[in-house]
Length: 212
Ligand code: B1M
Image (tube, rainbow, N blue to C red; front, side):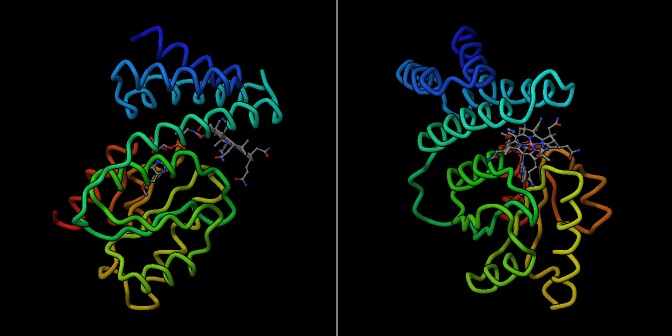
């Protein structure tokens, strides 16, 4: 199993999409859980790529190619995570905040929530606070979940809190924040109702927020 996780990590660091497909196929055939494959194989691979980018060992084109491999890995694993639960535990509007195009982690969160029985409206990336609120009102959402990967885009999570307050929706619609630069202290400082470090934590926290 360890070898497959290492291969998964290498598939992302080497930006090898054929290897991504092959690892996912072999892992699922061997009965490995898709969520575990993401967590122990592919995600460590993209984290390593991020570190190399930060240390200027690799540059944007390479980061982009690895991110395409990671995106494929997430798509393939997400399909295997999907659940067939019929009764919805609650409605969640989810997206990556305005100005931010990082959507791989957000899509994994969407899959975990769907697998945990929530109805998820995934608005994609670069979503304005107004669009989050409009959709949440339209679908009578319990929770708005936002993902921010850049220190410069985290403030959009605060803008969302401000708009909810202005429209007297704060408390009626709960908010949940996540993403690499986000932490509990940030969530507390902007008045978000919840924070989670990863997708499994997001599903647990949202269950708590909607009381189910
Ligand atoms: Co960018 N990028 N990137 N990037 N990128 C980071 C975020 C960075 C940390 C890399 C680095 O320097 N080490 C850095 C940000 C630095 C900072 O803000 N301080 C950075 C930068 C600088 C940039 C650009 C500015 C680069 C440039 O153009 N010069 C640019 C910005 C574009 C923009 O958004 N406007 C950029 C572009 C890109 C790509 C397009 C090449 C690509 C994104 C492709 C895509 O998403 N479609 C990319 C990638 C891949 C990364 C890294 C390497 C990996 C992100 C990722 O997919 N991780 C990233 C480095 C890193 O994160 N270590 C980096 C895997 C994913 C599964 O994890 O998204 O963290 P993550 O999601 C996790 C948790 O965070 C959590 O659960 C998920 C699953 O476990 N979570 C939530 C996420 N959302 C949640 C919501 C919740 C709860 C939990 O509740 C609602």
